[in-house]
Image (cartoon, rainbow over all chains, first blue to last red):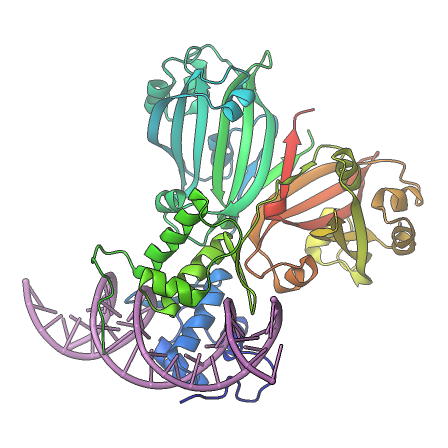
Length: 244
Length: 244
DNA sequence: AGTAATTTGTTCGTATGTATA
DNA sequence: ATATACATACGAACAAATTAC
C-alpha cells in the first residue's frame, strides 16, 4: 500500500528533513561522537530505515558522518589541516619537520617505463625515452597523507630507485646523481574525487577528495629532473603559495 | 522471502558489478551520451531496479553520470579545464581573455560588516574594523565558474562597492581609490565539497567539488588591500603556480 | 573460545510522487 | 492527456562485521 511522501507536505522530502535533523543535533551538541542506530533513528523520526539511510548517505557525502559496519555511525572529527608551503624550494619532508610532524615515505612501486608524450614534454625529452617511475606514499604522524608518482630520465638517474629506497628522500637520491640542488619550476593544481587505487593506499573511503598537484622540478641550469604528480587527501592538507 | 546477495558469490556486491559494467560501457564507447532507462538496465543485469539505482548513485558521486528526472541518465561530458595562472600578478579576467575566453563578473551581494579576528589578521587591522564584503560570481563563456567573497577596509576603500558595480573589475575599483597596482602576497589552497549556497549560484549538483583559494593582495608598499576567498568548480579549473 | 545480540550493508518487492517528452 | 523516466518511501529478509556475554 502506498503512503504520503510528506507528512506535512511542504515540498521537502523526508530524508532531507531527517538529514537536517541530524545536522541540527550535531550543531547544538546533542551528538558529539556516535549516532543512535538506524532503527532507533527511524523510530524517532517516524520514517522507514531506508529513509534514515538515505539521509545518512547524504551526510556522509558531505563529510559529516562516517558509518562502520557492525559498529555504528560516527561524527567525522575534523583535524586541522597540515600546511605545505610550495615555493621555489618545495621540500615536503623538511616542511613537515618544521611543523613538528614526523613524515615517513614509503616506496610502493618502482618501474622502468617509456615516456608518454605528455610526460616527455614535461621532462623535455623525446617520447619513448626510458624513465624510472616511482610510486610513493607519504605518511605523516602515522596517517597516510598523499600518494605521488614521479618520473626521472633513466639515463641521467640510473640508480634513483635504489638511492631513494636507501635514503627515503628524493633530495638525497638526486644529490647522489650530482644534483646538488633543485627548484620548483611549476605547480599545477586541480582537485577531484579519489581513484580506487589511491583510496586503498591512503586508507580512506572512496568518496574522499584529493588535491592533485602536477609539478616540475628543475636543476640549477633549469633542466627538468623530476616530473611529479601528487594526490593529497584534501581534508588533511593545505597548500600555501607565498610571494618570495 | 530472502535471496542470495551474489549470483556467483565472489564477495563483490551486485551494485558494484553493475557500476563496473556501466563504467566498462563508457570506456569502450558503447555508451556515448545517454544510459538506457533504469528498468531496462535492471532487466539487462538481472537485478532489481534499486540495485541499478545504487550503482548509478555511486557513478554519479564519481562524477561520471548525471540523472535528470523525467528525461534520463546521461554521461557527464568532461570539458577541458580552464587555466588560471596565479603568480605575483593574479588577474583573473585578464587571464581569461588571454585564453580567448569571455569572463563576466556579477555582484551578488555587498555588505558592510565588522572584521572577525580571522579576517582582521589577514588585512592587518583590528577585529571589529568596518569592512566591505563583496560576494561575486565569475561566469566564463556563459557558465558559472567560481564564487568569491572579498573584504576591503571600509575607511580606505569607501566607494569600492559602487566602483566595482560600475566597472565590473576589482583592479579598476582599486585604481579609483589610488591603488595603481597590487600583487598577490599569499595564496592558500584547499579543496572541499561544495556548500549548499555556492551550489545554488554555481548551478551545479550538491556533490560537486570546489577548489578553495584564500588569498591576500597587497599594494606596492606591501599593505593588504584585499582578502579574498574564492571557490572554483574543481572540474572546470586548474590553478597554475609558476616560478617567475 | 564461542555464541548471541547488535548494527550497518545489500537486495528484492511494491507503491506512489514528480518532471519531461 | 498519456506514457516515460527518475525520485521517494515503506516493508521484509538476509549478509557481514563487530561487540557483549
